[in-house]
Image 1 (tube, rainbow, N blue to C red):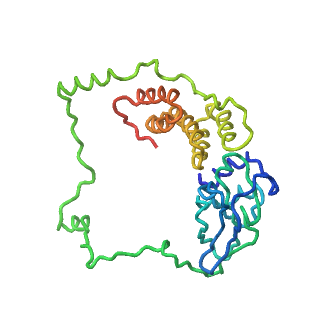
Image 2: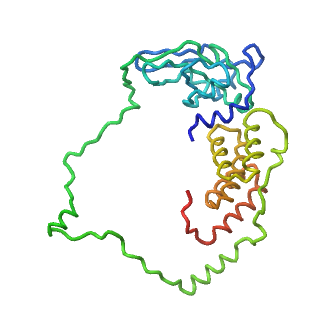
Image 3: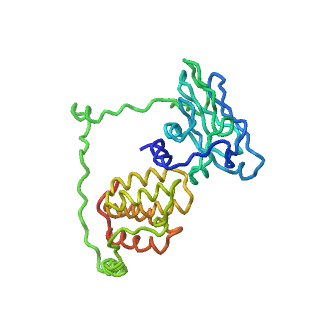
Length: 309
């Protein structure tokens, strides 16, 4: 599922603040223009050093972006720094484009402002029909060999009697028994496996999700936990958590989301992937993630025969 759907999942919970509020957009002189080959979006950051260091998500839409509903239908293009001052876009020729630069911190806090010239553009810009970009990033130089490769036709040569038949399958590899020393070493490693009692018996919900929230990505995460995760709908839970993790999240919320994604993968039997998510969640939740890592490794055993997607 693409980034557009992921952003839509979060935006449904956002609270819009009017342009006259105190939380005004930190950029000024936001405008978009076309030179016939590309669209250039320019802006100026305020004198606040935090604004220059902040990150913004660039959105493009075929209609003016004036609300969370229209923002949810826009295409996310990139994450840029406020100090960059410029972004180049190459939209489809002949299609009008409106742009928005939204502060990532505003999305995380659930407070978005839509101010003409500060966070959104109000005039459509487009490339002329038939326009072709000449930007070098869209072209890759081809490296040609000075002489062609030899023409190999092994099956034709075989049928004509001029070549040897190629094997259609590799010969089976014979199994070999471990020598006594290796067997003893493996037995010692198996004794280090955690006991059966270390396996969590039910999903764990962190204390942070017990607190009521009504906006932002924290609300979205709580909605997933209270919904498909608690209900044991693991496929739906995995999909929604994966969508949420495509967004630039605060570190603590990302750790919580990965903790729940690890549990979801655990109950789906995807223990290798679950271990990776639990390891990433340990940054803020060591005590909670460690038993799940042990349980996942225990379920995997000394070797994992299955290929996990």
